[in-house]
Length: 215
Image (cartoon, rainbow, N blue to C red; front, side, top):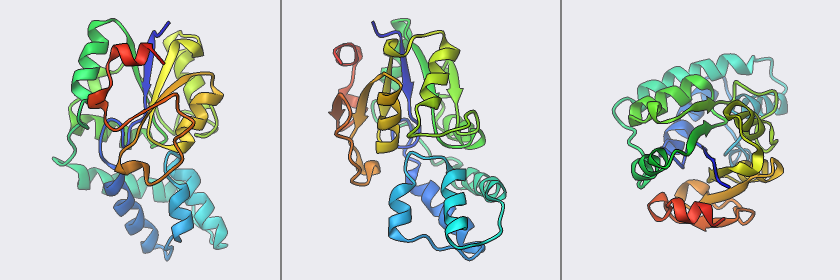
């Protein structure tokens, strides 16, 4: 029985991927790092710190990735100010889930500062019972730890939780946690393999409680 919905953030609740990418490009360029196309393909759905660490190590540089994450968070906050509405269908789905007594949580690979800024700008930060960010876990997606932690904090068994994702890493993490997955196939998926989801929709405008319960 479905008791909780765990939402990814970027590309699912808000369309912040392009802004996040521009902020990362700027911060990395400031220290002399220009990511290759292959590196950029691997970043989606994963923790920013992990992505930065890999880029730094690949170049044999001595830079603290955490410091770059902090700089990116500040730049991202300036860039999204007044410029980050919720994705289509999000407000109605959140309202319907709340009316039905279904718990709602955000499970994002982004740092907590960036998650909070995004949710505040979209006007939906108070719609969730709990937030799991990339700062909360030892391991990030595609490891199942973030989703298992969210289920634990909500007092749910993993099979009682359904995940809404748009990234391959997130789908792999959710399935490894023993959860059903609804994937949103939008331009934000960047051609990733989301076939591992239990169902795919083009927009959350096409998702409702009946569809989620039927997964």
